[in-house]
Image (cartoon, rainbow over all chains, first blue to last red; front, side, top):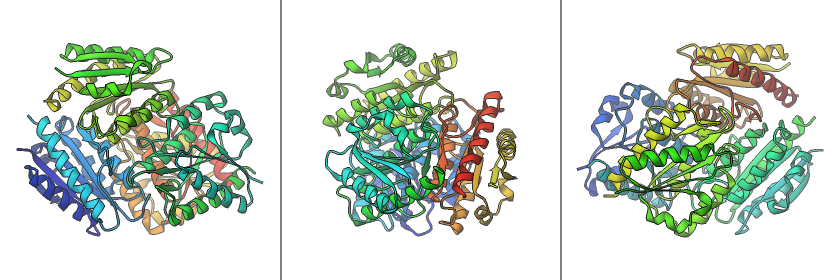
Length: 158
Length: 158
Length: 158
Length: 158
């Protein structure tokens, strides 16, 4: 059984809403999921999961500083996450407001950890995004993302 | 008077439509504008302008190969565009389909040429984007972009 | 047995040299490897592999136009590469000359195909890079990259 | 006279060393320069400068969380920096360790502020980088960067 962490930093609740949808889809796909606000995650616990998914609002085209600080603290376990699957999602205030680049900023951090990240051939290519409150398309994107993350994490963790 | 090139590669006509709007706004702001399909632009002519703006559809999250080939050919005049202003815009088929990253791929190429590129504090931060046919918001973004490019190109070329 | 394609576009021979090293390491790790210049690869053949690795020289901070054209043609099989593993490597003329961003430009294209890409917790984080002729560090990076790609492709293709 | 801020976050002293070199070159080119650790910069003071240059160590391929928090706080003056010139530099622990992407992460934040950023046709294309202690090439890159930033900031602020 795949162990997945879905964590988020959220002020408006939009990123949180996306996290819930990803977590629900992953559970229905058979994963054991911990859904946690980022403030409650100990970086050392990242080693316990097969798949790590983090969401952030779009601040200046990148993950929020609070989320980046979390990644900076994760240097304590640098090298120990290699081979795990990483995911990302983001909610922004504006269209073309940097949510693609925010998702990529999180994926890049997972790559530096030696992890694998996954794209999607349909929307949303790099990871689920939302402009403002997640609409049906954004939530559907979250659902598919959660399902596919479980599929590949399951194969990789065998 | 600012001399500006607005060029584009366009199959569906969407990127072309954006180019027309940027060119029109730049002319109204006082620039002398050449609006040309990229296939008709000689890379050596890039040296004649103060401001260079190129649009591409979003193909695999980046400028089209045809556009990239154009940049590759521009190596002939490498170093001679330093200090000019560069701009970019893109039209994509899907939301979160890579149009932010496509705009950034063009801006990056301008940076390698030693040029300056400009962001926008409102939408669209990195340059005008459209999902499918440009709607009112996309066209307004093009108008503002054209105007601001003229403003800064004018100061820099003095 | 993992089937891997290692392909490259190379003018100076530096990117080719890296491709050979990755292919050799992958074969020694148990993969069946096709090492081909990109000009000889039919995009439809991409479906036959578990792992696809493409190298390009760094031109304007991104993959060469020729390589981008290849990706653009791959739209014919869009969606059919989902779940495969993608890799990238690059050789540049200058330090800080855009080879990290070139590797990322290829990885991004794989993500749009719905594939998985892999980072490395040591050097080189996003994929092997070389400044000029590959030195010992660059070749070692290629070796490790080939080995790890086989490992994860093997798990994913089961 | 151009007013420039050169600010940095530095643990090892490498990023600080680069900051000093940029500041020195900018002063010699005629600018009035404030060289300050980031912790001492009030975001509101950013409005007082024509050119803003920030350096960060490379942490997970992006600016440090502390620096990102600074940008997040700068939302208080969002829109008020439009038209200024922004610069970036970075020091990393590893070659191909993400310093290009770190420089770009800072430039992207400046773009979201509506500012202009500048590339270089020679090394280092996006902004000065160093692997470990800045060597002669890195310091020379800092010098040229400081000089060119003054040149274009001077024209833009007229």
